Amino acid sequence: MYQDLKELYWWQGLKRDMMNFVAKCLTCQQVKAEHQFPSRTLQPIKIPQWKWERITMDFVSGLPLNSTKKDSVWVIVDRITKATHFISGVPISIISYQDPRFILMFWKKLHEALGTKLNFNTTFHPKTDGQSERTIQILEDMLRSCVIDF
Image (cartoon, rainbow, N blue to C red; front, top):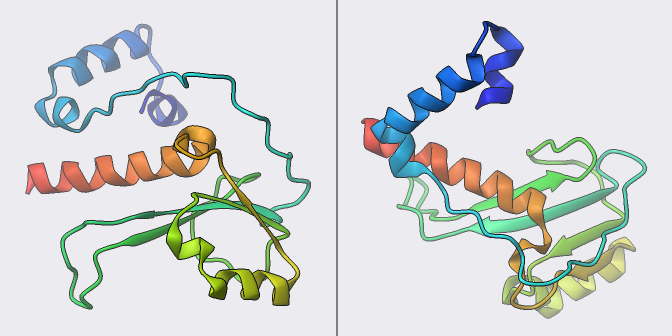
């Protein structure tokens, strides 16, 4: 929030004023996420050289059904630009949860046919993929905020 605000405005004590506002804002407190440090050292992930060459992806599920009877959001994040949207083209590498949706034979055959490599994060350590996790947290906070305010 501070990073966004300082792009548009500046005054002496901006950060302090923003922190005081957030501390008193009921909606901000209700959607505030808990953050924990990983319990062990994480393994480094290869640094991408070009946009959409290496992505992360995850699902947010259990949402209320929308008009097309869907209750999930597929989050795809480009690791170099941090852009989150639908992509065209084929990435070189994908880092994913060890989720049954990705382990199914369909995905294995698809990656073989496309010539991509499917990498998995550490089991029981979903925070390996911080970019998708942070994007999902922002999405969930925004949805919660909308529900609270409306």
